[in-house]
Length: 244
Image 1 (tube, rainbow, N blue to C red):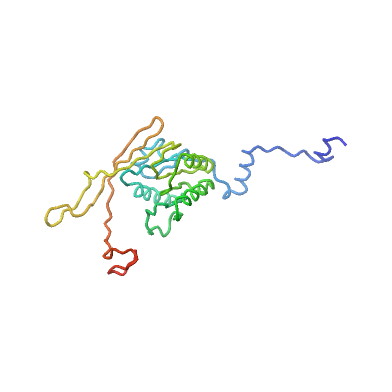
Image 2: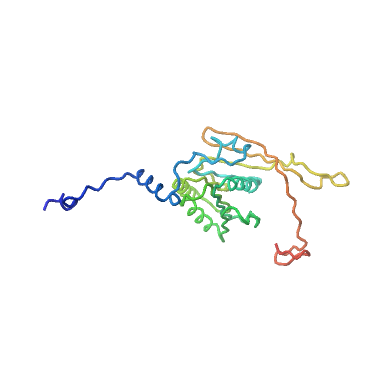
């Protein structure tokens, strides 16, 4: 019996060849919720015009690594505002809070993961990036070397979302953000004696750098005061009865 007869039984039609792009289109048609969409813009707009104006092409790059160097703070405040805007327009956001920098005020919002050590934080971010189900993944508090940043660049390319790592390491990052507070431009409310008593607004310089790109802006953000604990021991309730 000829070999061709073994491959194709007599009377059976030949099996059509399907390219990967055709297979992806078929899956997207039959199971739209299971396949990440490839018809995405190259960037993810933050929804904050003053920030998007300094980012290349008006947003965070999709499928690439963005490294945020928070030299004197500001990253958590800005990324929290960006997260709120993205959630408001239906984007999914995941925040791997390895630095334990965000509070418990997001009752409904992004997926927040608080791992117990930096290694777990990096692993959680890799899984979230590879799945492709999130428009934005934020990672803080992980010790990243050049090898880790290279792995993240592959994962975010596979998933197609935007990725921001708050880290001093900038290896393989296509976009580098740097934020610092401008203490001499804070606005304060005076005390009854005329001395500065309460910070009302803070000034924050945000700079974006990339291949052939360098832009910056100064943000003026309202400051939210918080009550100081009356008990210095973290495990002892203060006079209001709160442990946190």
